[in-house]
Length: 605
Image 1 (cartoon, rainbow, N blue to C red):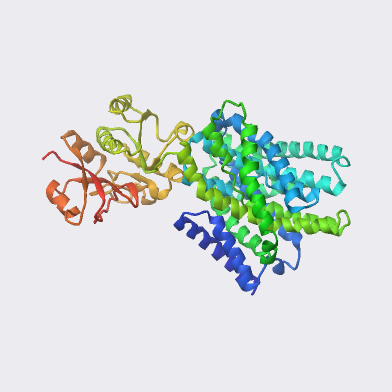
Image 2: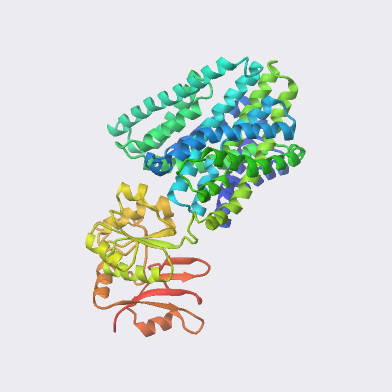
């Protein structure tokens, strides 16, 4: 197989795995690993063959890819999330990491009978919790904002901490012990933290200055920042070994929290790049593992996996958050049952297995220690598969049973609280569907609250709404203000929260205008409600006595019968069935299957 064919297969299988995971609603890592193992077994092709045995090249590529992933993760972290979750995050990323490291190292030494150097290295690597796995799980679980912030911050912040800890363990291992390397390890830790933080803040200020003064054209912003991340990672590592991951993480956090320029487009670019990197890395790294190596460590790895899930994670969460007063028992229990490992654990393990091999070749370590380090790679992949499988299946159910996530996510966020919105929202609310209304006019908000609706006086486009308000059970946005431009902007801004398929707006008043005077189609959300009624038509229908009717369509009573009864000017607004839940009706609605309940506004006549 030629290198071009191999790379094309890796890329194609990676994207196919991501699509299958989306369709089947399962973690993509499971399919990526299966494809990686399958490609290697069926073709015998491995990335090492195309690199001429140059493991240093693979090490460099993997490290750089991980740096990009952590930078993207840092861009998603906002300091505003620390108001509620700051103390738990600090404890989990310090005391929790220490507890997990000690317990994991002891468990690895006992179960695998490895040298303390290898066992401690594995313990250091496994303190990470996989942000690339946690993110998709959070989108499915939809826990409270506080829990979501804790899990997200922990997953991203502990990754460089785990990598730094692994470096310190490696230095102690090569030096012959902690006593021999005591001062060197301490100095290395201080230098790593200083270089990582100071360099990141300096680079962040330079980037902020360049973007604010528009010295970087818009079409170059994303790739410019990608190049800066790579340069910062390399420069940081040249100043202090393995400080680069901390540098890029802090760089992402610093850029995410500055107020001078927007990094939304850069974040979107990096999110897409992250999907590509994860798809390629998992298939490539999984393909390097011999199935015989997996089977040789299968039994002890499963025992170790059980210890990680049953003992290590609960102990690190409960002990680190003990008497903090910021988390109740239900929240601690959920956090104790969510610690999947992902691409960072796999990549760092592969890197240090190579490093141990180099150290053994140079005579710094015994050959049997390097052999044990090689066994870490299949072990960690077994841990990744096991934790993703276990937490992926149990986390949603546990969140529901503990009450830290809403039972259903088919609610609607309405931008606007005009009379017609209050009427349909009240009908949905009465049937148990979560609804939330946002409006800047106090009269509309007061009227909504008088009817028992959850309404907040705020601008849908404000930073406050996106960063501070929670949307429990909400899965759709319907932008229904009288301002078409606000509606279009709202659907654009909230697509990354609810997904492009779940952001809707009412038909615009300029829908029949010439393209030179109407808003471009690609700048709008999905158009909702049958018959394409404008804001003015809906307002007139409501003010003239229009009412909301709820009708179950059957084999006998079809959509056509509904319009015959209520007239062609009836507006179907929402649909609900057992398979797809509640959703806005599309503007081009032509047919509705039996068994669907429709919510429609009809004229009083």
